[in-house]
Length: 107
Picture 1: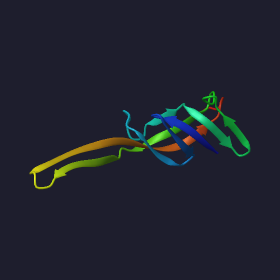
Picture 2 (picture 1 turned 30 degrees about the vertical axis):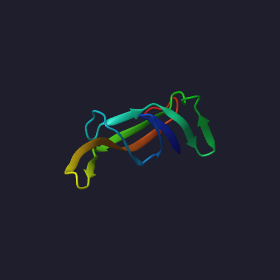
Picture 3 (picture 1 turned 90 degrees about the vertical axis):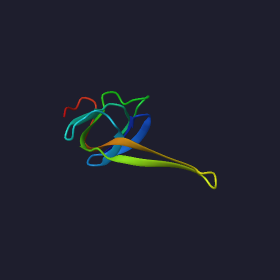
Picture 4 (picture 1 turned 45 degrees about the horizontal axis):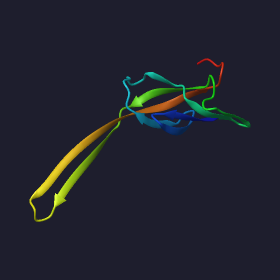
């Protein structure tokens, strides 16, 4: 069983037990998140395509980590004594998908 979800204007293909990195949000490690924007839901031969969303379908995930990506921007002009160094740290949330629920199912 897999699902295609939308989060932060990006689409992800998720299965139970898979991990994915989402945009940062206020949460604690171990907290459960509910992702409601399910675009497609597949369980074997049964395929549900949303128009635009699959009504009632949800993906439950658990926060496991807060990775950060450091980006360094450097500008340099030779022989002009011009050097600029700027950095940016982008925070993310890494989650593990625990359940994919169809319409009417409970956790």
